[in-house]
Amino acid sequence: MSEAVIEEKKCWGERFVQLRLKEEEIARCARPGQFVMVRVQEGFDPLLRRPLAVMKVEESSFYLFWEIVGRGTKILSSLNVGSKLEVLGPLGRGFSLFPSQALIVAGGRGITPLYFLASHFKENKIPFTFFLGVKDKEELFMVDFLQDFPGAYFWSCEEPVEGGFCGTVLSLFHTWLEDKSFSPGTGVYACGPEGMLKNLYREGKTQNFPLEVSLETFMGCGFGACMSCAVEKSNGKGYFHVCKDGPVFLAQELKW
Ligand SMILES: Cc1cc2nc3c(=O)[nH]c(=O)nc-3n(C[C@H](O)[C@H](O)[C@H](O)COP(=O)(O)OP(=O)(O)OC[C@H]3O[C@@H](n4cnc5c(N)ncnc54)[C@H](O)[C@@H]3O)c2cc1C
Image (cartoon, rainbow, N blue to C red; front, side, top):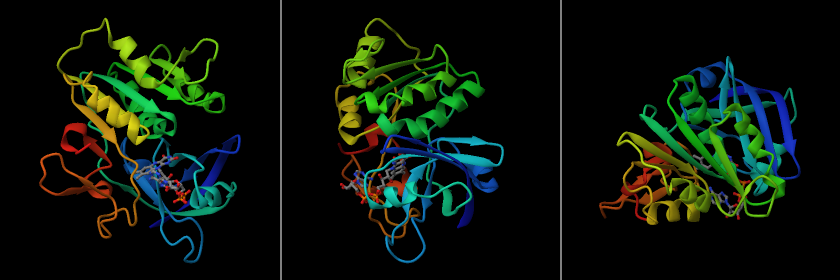
């Protein structure tokens, strides 16, 4: 467990927050797809830490980005620059990092670990294309994150917006895939709502490539002690624990 100091805070409307936190060890060791467990506040309420993916690292700092969905993320969003946050990590198994080329599919806040992955691909000159889907105009600001990857991204919005594909990220992705062919070493990487991941896998459009998904299950401890984040294996031989076996899995290993 370490203490990270909030160096910068950005908010978008009432729902989204990004922090830059100073913590050398996490900044040095975190790999794309890994997460940290964040203590919400002092005392025992809420008791459980909340898992958040690492979005970016920069010298001795790292970034978190989250959507406010309940009490924990709401309390965290009230912290300001200069406050300290107790964090445990980096935890979990991340994405595989060296495909010959990559297709990245993000739904809403699922952009967080995938932004980190795309930064790694950019740094290592691995060609990639990023597809981001947002639900509404309130989430459109996330497209700005992708300006760090010029010419390598497409986005969709479920509300009609000028200049954007109107629909879900999966229809955008499938439309784009139609007239393309890929080498065997291509990897597909996804994070987003469970329904999106399930459809991406079941529709089979990625069946010629390994599909890696990052899951956002409920989690108690973050390191395999409480077993609350179990997901069933596809081979019927028990369960994975998302915190230590994941959060990134090959989609075919999971029962959907
Ligand atoms: C490895 C991992 C990485 C994650 N990274 C991010 C991230 O980078 N950014 C981000 O915004 N979120 C991320 N999440 C999800 C985030 O941890 C939860 O949204 C958060 O814990 C909710 O806490 P809360 O106290 O605000 O909400 P709670 O009060 O616990 O719940 C509020 C509502 O959200 C639902 N809910 C809570 N947690 C989940 C969940 N995990 N899946 C589905 N529904 C849920 C509850 O049913 C309830 O309706 C990640 C989750 C995991 C497992």
